[in-house]
Amino acid sequence: MLFPRSIVLTLLLALVPAAASAWPASIISVHDGDIVTVAPCGDTSTPIVIRLYGIDAPETKQKGGLDSTTLLRRLLPEGSSVELIPQDVDRYGRTVAIIMADGSCINARMVEAGQAWVYSRYCRAKTCKNWQKLQKQAQQKRAGLWEEKDPTPPWKWRKEK
View 1 (cartoon, rainbow, N blue to C red):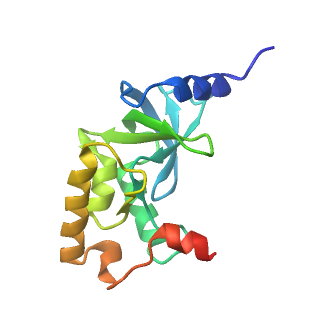
View 2: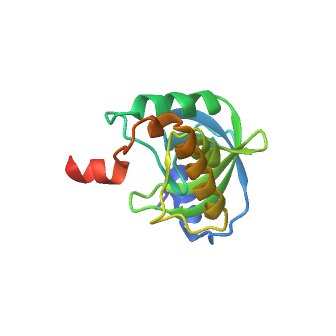
């Protein structure tokens, strides 16, 4: 039986250990502040949905969701080249990855701008401690979602909805 290439690629990624090598991709679209679709190695016939590792951004209909999505679209414009460092596969079959663009970690930039939380429940890499520091700095500056005194984290917002 033949499988579509996207299924084969997803299955292969599921077998990749957490310390996987980076691989190139180009951005097809940004769904929200922590989910994008990419063309692996520029191959648009095999799009893959990527969840940004270690962060959780406000949902689209949640307060701050539009700002978060807008920033990620600015950081990752359609067609831009990125490097993905796979960390895991989530329960929806999405590759969970650190995204690098122009030598910058996009996951960290979202936290630094106050447009995403460090998702402590899932952020276990060494870099997560640095991201926690960036989040505290964003809170102190009252940047992005931290303009509000006590913003509702997306995981709580989803549970309420």
